[in-house]
Amino acid sequence: MNKVLIIAEAGVNHNGDIEIAKKLIDVAANAGVDYVKFQTFKAEKLVSTLAKKAAYQAVNIGDEDDSQFNMLKKLELDEAMHEELIDYCQQKKVRFLSTAFDLESIDLLVELGIDIFKIPSGEITNLPYLQKIASKQKPVILSTGMSTLGEIEAALTVLYENGIKQSDVTVLHCNTEYPTPMQDVNLTAMNTIADAFKISVGYSDHTLGIEIPIAAVARGATCIEKHFTLDRNMEGPDHRASLEPTELKAMVTAIRNIEIALGDGIKQPSESEQKNIKVARKSIHLSKKLPIGHILTKDDLIMKRPGDGISPMDVSKIIGCSLTKSLAEDTKLTMSDII
Image (cartoon, rainbow, N blue to C red; front, top):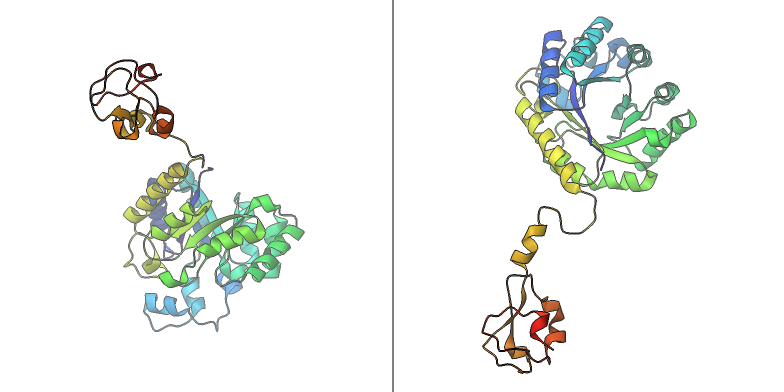
């Protein structure tokens, strides 16, 4: 199978601090991910000054300010910070990715040379946004948290009608509760999406732990996105639903093992186990000492290891044959022993 694309979602876990952002890049590079992803937005273009924080954001931040605008304004990355982080990613040999949350940010990312667009769940019903993304003619990863199949179909239609090829789209099943309760994961919906739209699928995970993205790979995910942080106890909206560095590395290792273990789907003895066939299987042996000319019956035969003689699957061909020589108990029969 093709290599699973692993996106480590730094998001806004840098808390607006470029040095924390660089430390997150260090962690992602060390874990062996393909992309480290941030978020690109201008708070004024993203959210009304009257918008309230999501419940999980209010709980995780724990201050008395319920303004989503004020929270996001502190988490912006300006153009110079983007350029610095892109350069740092190149030094660390991990690819930079960011999600744009407004139309101007889409243009900025194009100017910065981004090679793929990640559409967040909240923009799946934003027609002008989808049209602008499609106009850039780059591969697209589409998250589908909070959406129905009908909404996914509508978003894909917009992308296709504006020039994006189906082969350039990956749809991520997702749940946008942070953290996502296990009973709400509904991982089989990822396969429903694949079947419905004949499209590459993956999973954007907000559960605690690493087992769900690993399971998603086993179910055919071609892309995994997962939030990570330096420390879950840091202040900020997403830290508590993020992996810490050792967990991120463990997830990547597990995914790489799973993608190897999935194999080619052909059921046959593997190279490593072929040597065990003779050891583990059985051959036809004699259960007792028998004279020359004896006509073999079922009671004369016993199936024992090793398996390098006549297969027990051929026992019916052996019964009724006569011995060409006298043979001792426990003899492994060969075709030269019978006529």
